Image (cartoon, rainbow over all chains, first blue to last red):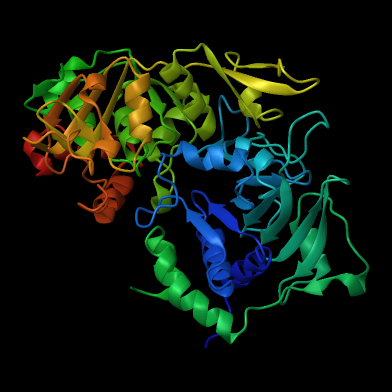
Length: 245
Length: 273
């Protein structure tokens, strides 16, 4: 078994955050979280229900695209995943544009359901493989969905963690900040400080963990049943990661 | 009474310029033959509503100059990346872009289904989506205390256009599990569908098909269009044509390339077959 790739380390790190949950949903453009959710389902012996959007076979929902959002509003979804062209230190995410939104320097697809699900799903796990001052910024150019809200705003949900290609951050709702939790193999605290555009809490040196690399059994699951299932939605990702079908 | 038309071009001829046109996402069948017919007839100033997100069909309409405004939660070609003509049009202010979020579109269409003026929706507060939408209001929950909530005005599209596996001669359209199409048909003033086939049996009379069928009551006109969703797919019938879409993305990086694509694949009706 060849050693774990960065994507596989991220998949395993996210899967560990889903242990014990009963229903997670996965949105658009989310091959790594999708794989993580399927891995967590394999490890749960099938107890975890995974709703993968964009899949035609075995749909979880039968009442159209709105059902995911209604389901989340009722508290029936425990975890969801959001990325961001930019993510800032208060966990605001930007899925829209760089620069003035009316005359953008760069334009991305758009906010999808983020501005809603970020408020309603208890455990929203942020992910961004590119960990650089360009993607992790002091302040986003456009707030697709805010990381924190005023106390009178109805918000049972919100950011739980941020998983990048270099490390894992926890998010503290109280402190409204990220805290470094674990470094992927080969990364140092100095690397993370240099490559992160926002300020974050740093625990005592000895409290900084190394992100656990998936073992042979997990890698076999990722490269076997998980890879085969994610291929239906993300054929390019599956081919790059696991080879031709 | 649903009108049965002969071609997607006759449907496109029934859809006037300048209207608010609701279109489905790529995971519910899109009437690509209807979209190509709109380009062929030189449709202008359409206001496109993505329910809730867009891909290839909006990129084609934008590139061909058919759209003045786009309201949607996202425009993406999935693993093929950004939609090239949409991205160019926003950067150069060729269209007015109204960013929104998926559940806001679903909720505003539900308001229209119910014939009520607005729908409240959780979330959203503090997002720049709200800050940039002067047609939305943040108001108090009338049944609560100090509980702000967003009010969205109902959206009543002038028309909706989609594709389905089959319809019957009474104008009933079978959509199976893709019930966003049902909401779109209920909420819109007119509904047009291209279908793979028009059958002689009554889809509402069969308990197997009736629950997944839009009654002809809501359907203005249908036309048969075999492989009418191509190069997108129809669940269980045919897959999305990744190779063709990759070819499109390559060409549509420039307006000249896009025009060449249209000349070959859109303007000549037989090209797609």
